[in-house]
Every structure is written in structure tokens, then in C-alpha cells.
Length: 115
Image (cartoon, rainbow, N blue to C red; front, side, top):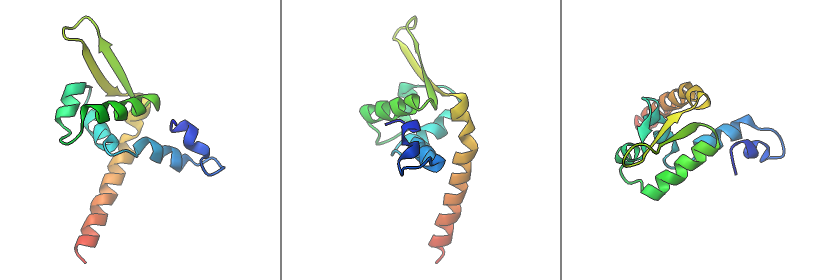
């Protein structure tokens, strides 16, 4: 189910649920963070995600692509074939949201750790 299809999960339009569906996934947030620096090849992404399997990365990338957050480019003229990923305009618009969530998380951790 794509994020757009999730918009009425509670029987009403819920933009927050749509946004969360895009970001929820063990590796999605870190994939998006990695892609903020620019286009990366599949193997480059995989090498920055210790513990993530090739299959899991492929699934997470597929979901982000279906939600139109990233775009996959395949260069058939390269040898071996070059597959790379980059943020779409919609994906780029998520960057401030991700940064705000990161800042909130840091404050949350700091607050609870000092208790």
C-alpha cells in the first residue's frame, strides 16, 4: 500500500499518516539522510548501512520509489550496469521535516537521559 493509499486509513483524510507511511521503515530515514548529499549507487548506499541486507535495501528503495520520494536511474551503457538513486522534488521537500524530527529526537534523548 503506497503512502497516498494510506491517507484514509482511519476513515478520514490524514496527511500525518501519509507522511509517517513514507518515513516508517527500519532503513528509510537513514536512506533519505544519505541521499540528501546527492545521488548514490545501490552499492554505495548499502556500504553506508551496516546491518542492512541487499534485499532489505532493495525493498525500502522500491517503496520510496513507489511513493515518488526517490527516483531510480539505470545506465545500461555502463559496465557493469549503473543503478543509482536520488531524491525527487517531493523527496527534497522532506529534508526540513527530517531535520526537524532529528532535532526533536536529540532533545528528547537529552531530556530523558538527564533524568
